Length: 302
Image (tube, rainbow, N blue to C red):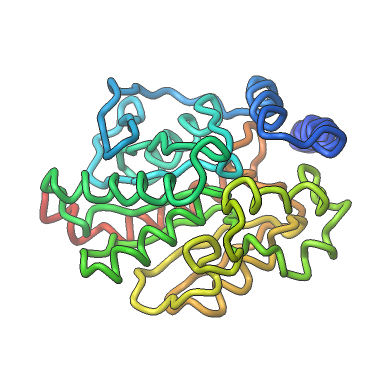
């Protein structure tokens, strides 16, 4: 009963945000609504946050789960449609992932569109990868993870590292990723009205705010249309009712070594929301994946 009530409460908050974003879509509106919703749905976790560190032209911070001896590292790119950042949501999510994985996380405050359109976010995330490598951390101990827009940036960062001859991380974790900014997947229409957070009419604005007139099928914007060979194994976590479901289905079918985990009737980035048992189970699954991928390197480091 408590789980059912919590699911109802979460969906109610998301439905209200969806209605408000549909009637007044703008970056400022998305930022305001995201911050307000965070107080109602964000996870509660115990963690410490470091002073900011500089990565290229951006800032980042270490998120350390309290009481956890970290062997691995999670390089994390937050969601927010490339236009918003909500530390009250994403820091606790990263802490929960770190606790499950026995890892600490580096949260990257990449520059946001439309003030800083492509390639600012991509450059900042790639600079964060350079930062970890130049710090002497074994890439075999690192997993790159991201939710929503951050999932896009995780894949693009790995693709760029591959193309420039840099080491790959041990794995990728993609939570409800946005991988096709042309929004050509059939789930955009099929799940319209079922997704509790988004409507098809407002997600399409993201490409214009971030891509600023570019071809939205450019693989640097929409990695689903790029070459996915040569990337590390990935775990893709998504809800069955999401508008973006097909992004995950197509990526898992195309990317070698990809694992797909579809959760029935779960909303966008549901592991970030408190009180959802499915979210707790998904975090445990992600933690197991990260431990598996980094086991050899972390054992050697110890």
